[in-house]
Amino acid sequence: MQELTSRTLAWRESGRWVPITGHDIFIHERPGPSGSPPLLFLHGYPSSSYDWRHATDRLAEHRLIMFDFLGFGLSDKPPDQLYSLLTQADIVEAIMAHFGAERVTLIAHDMGGSVATELLARDLEGRLPFELVSVLLFNASLVLERASLLVGQKLLRSRLGPVAARLTSEFTFRRQFGAVFSANHPLSDQEAADQWSLLTYHNGQRLLDRLIFYLHERVTYAARWKGALSDWPGRLELAWARLDPICTEAVLRAVLELRPGVSVTRLPDLGHYPQLEDPTASIEVIERLASEAQPGTLPG
Image 1 (cartoon, helix red, strand yellow):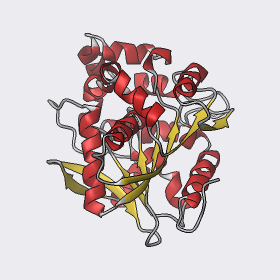
Image 2 (cartoon, rainbow, N blue to C red):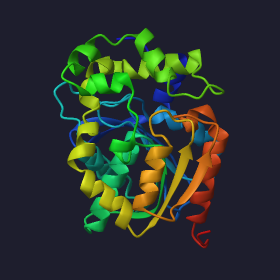
Image 3 (tube, rainbow, N blue to C red):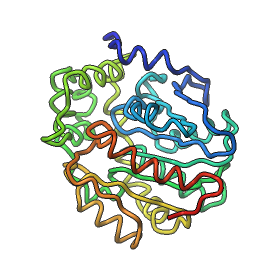
Image 4 (cartoon, one colour):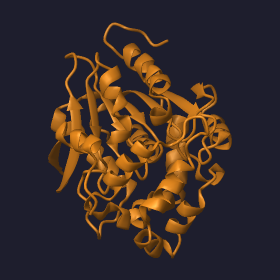
């Protein structure tokens, strides 16, 4: 197991582990004004809540809750777990109950967007135990058949997935992870080292084939989650990076077919990780949504 970098070690020290649904889940929480809904951040595959760290410095007026999904980052990584998005959605519910949050503004990226659609579906069924004030989805494979999966993703999703996971090295990780960044905002050596250290914490790289199980669920629950995108009556917005090689404009167009008229903030010069490539541009979108969710304000 590779040791954490100095930066990810500091991130670990800024949070804590909380027993959630039988597992220790790493949570970073920063208090904010009372009476305002917290901002809950959902990260993507194969990274962690560390993706959202820039928000802690730039959203000082808001309460923030970030956590690592089961199997990711600093949370528990049981080797025989079925890493279902339904389980991850259960963890979201349990975390909200732990903090006593009755209302929340949800911000999600990549795989986190898939978890968000399950939460929307549960809300439509009347069984979500908290109120979704508003939801902001960054690039995600919300309509999988329109996404352009990378070769590595396809391999991990195949029968050869366990072999591919065991053979994953820092070199192959850097090459594949770096491929989803835009040319003008490339993956830095520092960011790559940080991300690799969190992935390999408790040998998480050996679980990559299990963690990508959510792509299979994207097929199994396609009608349910597309229906949630279409029918959820609350405030839903998108922030879409145009240079994303996976969640391309084709995915965005498919989402717009499901939900015509949804508000879209375009990030024209960014790739798959806009919150890492240009934190300022990404957080400006979050700040606007969050400010409009404060008591006494009206949606724009």
